[in-house]
Image (tube, rainbow, N blue to C red; front, side):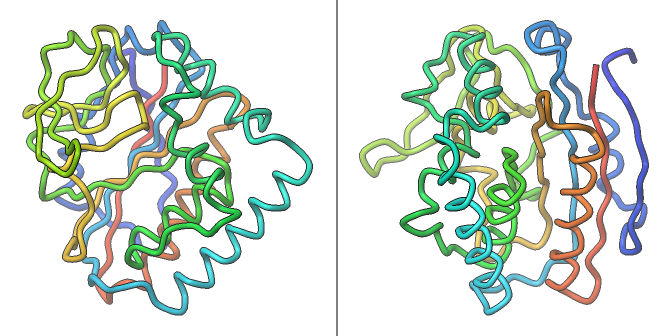
Length: 250
């Protein structure tokens, strides 16, 4: 399978898990790599999480991330940060306007000065690491998945369940848009812009899929460093936390 690169760099709490089958079937379409040959995705599954609200540890991590963002943005406009700029170019490549649909990293950075959202400790951890390492990092509830995750150029027919004006609605992506999807439809539109309702992390989530998106100049070693740090923090969320990972690259 020429689209994949498998790389194991297990940490002390990583074990083989049922999620390995899902990770083995995950894919990035050749059409996406043709659009951005420098793209890589590190997929990380985590099981055995004990749900809980924002706590002292996740609050401290968010505060550290807010400070890091203010320091970075004191020296550079958000759109000029190297990884943000790379993602803006990637959005333009498939016809999206980054001023209107901001990638998840840029959206968080722009909120950091006023304060990052406090959601629950699981969400707080990955939002904080996204800001601290300046990388788009998404978290999804594995229980909501129907089949393996795939990054595709959309046809425009795929369903995307979301909300509009407070109402549940089903939308469809623009043809050619880069989207994460499973067997039931789009799970995240425009690479890392907006997640569907079905796979959103919830207060009761016990198993999650994290997607770490990278473009140059972000390196593979940096990707694994972020994943290592994420696993380290998540290991505190339960006595039986287990994780597995896979790197998808051209």
